[in-house]
Amino acid sequence: MSSKTTVITPDQLAAQFAFCDQIRGFWYEQNITPTAYVETYGCQQNEADSEKLRGYLTQAGYAIVREAEGADVVILNTCAIREHAEQRVFGNLGALTHTKRRHSRQKIFLCGCMAGETKVSDRVYKSFPYVDGVFSTHHLWQFPEILWNVLTRKKRQFYIEDEPGSIAEGIPQVRDSRLKAWVSIMYGCNNFCTYCIVPYVRGRERSRKMADILAECRSLVENGCKEITLLGQNVNSYGKDLDENVDFSDLLAQIASIEGDFLIRFMTSHPRDASKKLFDTMAKHPKIAKQLHLPFQSGSSRVLKAMNRHYDRETYLEKVRYAKSVMPDLVLTSDVIVGFPGETEEEFEETISLIEAVHYDALFTFIFSPRVGTPAARMEDPTPKEEKNRRFDRLCAVQNQISERIHEGYIGKVFRCLVDGTDKDLLTARTEGGRLVRFEGDPGLIGSFQNIRITGATTWSLTGTLEN
Ligand code: SAH
Ligand code: SF4
Ligand code: F3S
Image: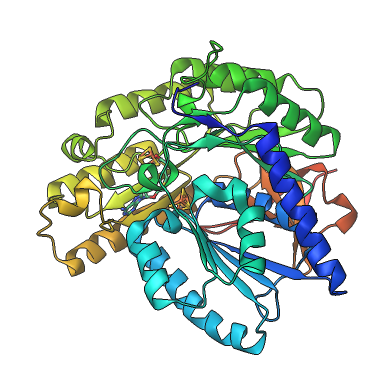
């Protein structure tokens, strides 16, 4: 493990549990059952972190509720990836003045990736005096202590010191779903793509020990979990910082050997590190979903270099070709940025041609958003906003046509799907590739795998009928 990674010891965690007990006693003496609301922005890493916050809160005696109004604790677990994400948080933070006025006991916290930015913590400190606590992702494991301090001292709490990062095993979790689980296998990122804020707010790459991950997955499967999604900013780097000689493919193979009927997904794969070994491992194990999220960001090798992505157009396409050759039914998705500083019209066209060459099932498309402190924010950016919007619309139109065509090709075929919920009068399910299917059926089927024949398709989803 990296010499800079701090491992939170069982004693340190026990001290946090002691704070939970104290908080429970604090409310018990007042004959109050306190309530808490956690709102999550951003990616699955944040969803997973919110499950830990709810775990701590439950242990401290809080009932988890679904809205901020009237809650004794409100936590905004924030995302810093684009300007728009931050604006939403500040908007919602403003609205909380009113809920707090109506419920004076309410304590408000801001955490997550935005809390790791000095500009944000300064602004909250100065302009949002009713926010009681701010803590960055490095300090999540100390949440009970922060909450206790807020409850018992009159002072606002700021836990925002920057660190390379820590690993804490054993924080309780209240999971959103019994069927599907997020499992973080590593934290942080070392890649420093020039547009990206994540390495600054989540610290250096650090991997959990394989034995800890396997124990968590085993227990999930024993408790009825049918789909495990492994999380990391760059899962292909898993293990590089560990003393054990293991990589991500080894971890996948080990998880796939756990007994039981379940699917394994993972995100995100960095194209530089996605290896033949990874694709062969995926192809070999039926429990690993044939679904790959492989963000390419740009189809232009020059732009990729300026982004510090460490692969070019050709190597990316080469990897996709190999992956498809060993997994003919592979469902491929990706992220792409338009309007990176200095992107020319020709370079944008290279992005379009890459999309047409690869034929992604779905794309997550973004317009470049400058993040303070990142190199790209200081690059010359002569392209006007309207031009970027035009490129964005064109890209979406091209991709929508592709997604529609792929989905139409599903019609008449039968897929094994995990039935995972309801949508109005219909049931919802996901194909192995992660595509959403709606169909008529008995809610008792939720939690089982079923064969579904696809009868209809739109750009975004499918409809079908039970095949049995
Ligand atoms: N670790 C993942 C992605 C994390 S962020 C990876 O490397 O692929 C999710 C997506 O947000 C990125 O893939 C990128 O497409 C987008 N993104 C990140 N920073 C951005 C920025 N400054 N402006 C616009 N989009 C951005
Ligand atoms: Fe950001 Fe790049 Fe790390 Fe992904 S790999 S989190 S885009 S720096
Ligand atoms: Fe956002 Fe942080 Fe995820 S910046 S995308 S919540 S890692």
